[in-house]
Image 1 (cartoon, rainbow, N blue to C red):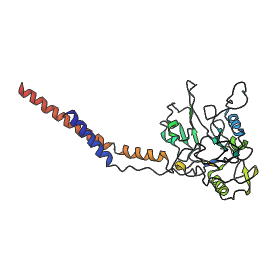
Image 2: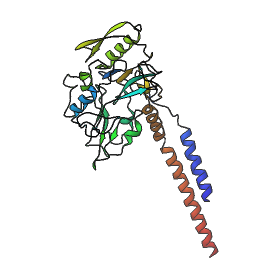
Image 3: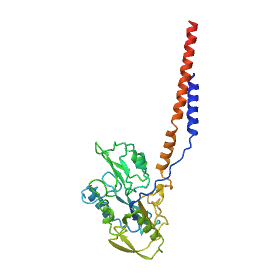
Image 4: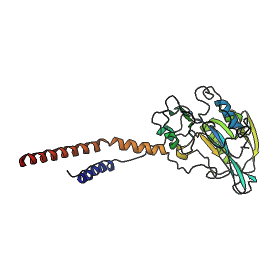
Length: 326
């Protein structure tokens, strides 16, 4: 068989096998039965970074210094040394809080603990797992091989690899429930929610947090509201403040299958750096396609087996022809 004919036949057989498969995405995963999470309200945040300091205290991480100021934290983004950071959006004169024009707004960056997490889906060794009960996305450094595939699978750019360590590993927020911390499993709350002086970061069940978020969206701008602080199910105290003109959307309710950490803002989410995401999770699409294709791998194998038989037969015929000549 000529080489060109071989490739034409093999590619044709493989293509026919794959196109015969009905490639479908699996459904998005549902929230865990006892999913916990956080609600971050940008309009309540004052940029004090108490949440950043508390996070580092809980996780035993040093502050990021600037010059001789070694006791203050000057982290500008997530890193192996910073699992939670407050960023700021500004426009023009930046004179009015929570205004897109000539204003500014704060934004919190940490792991979103996706309902259908891409990092878990792409990890080849299951070092990243979603707790089946709470929905918390945890990381096991003893299993991790350092491939960093999780970094490409996260739309929020959350997993951070420690390149300064020869045996570097991934660092991310585990909602204060990783080995050696375990605040949530002991009935506590996340450090950032506990430390927040205005209730901008609120802890609780995903269901209760979503109810609270929608309650705020239903309020009339200018109305004074008592914002719960700490755990939404049993607030430690309340913070009274006039209701802003929110964006009529809870970020994380449905984005990419939803997240356990949800956000509210008066400024457009794209201006706060949130990625453009639909309701379908990338994990549901990729896993569905891979499962369908792999299930039909037997057909290309059969096709290649047939081609091998043809090549062998043609070779034998050619050899017989040569013997006749001699």
